Length: 150
Image (cartoon, rainbow, N blue to C red; front, top):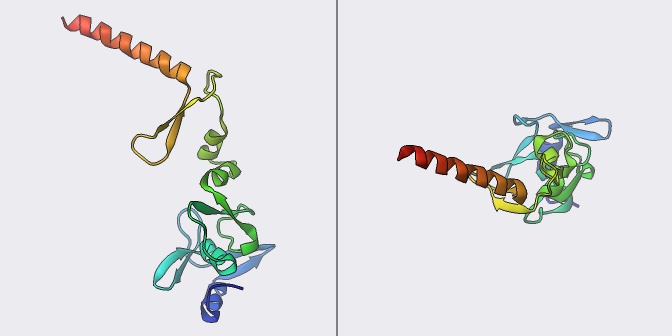
């Protein structure tokens, strides 16, 4: 069981406290509430170290979800491997989660196109009906501006 050595595991556990079923990280936290642990010459997320110790490597393209919803929890039984999308959808309070659950635009049309997001990673969903209407308005505006320049 586990991939940490006995001294590493002891050092890890010395930075935790029991709180109900959770094992709360008492070491350094980042601004989002995730713990940090220095292991084998690298600073790592504490919950990922807990997963690694209990289950081994995290598969490529997967992330760790806190079932208990506490980012400071490092109880390996409260952690599960999920896709980024699953992790986003499980977090009910964030803007990303709210938007990810939407299937229709504000006018009630289904999102039916996905384009790469400009200026960053990921993608953005569009409603082709509203997108076409916006493009028609823009073309009309440009035509009007061109006539005024002449």
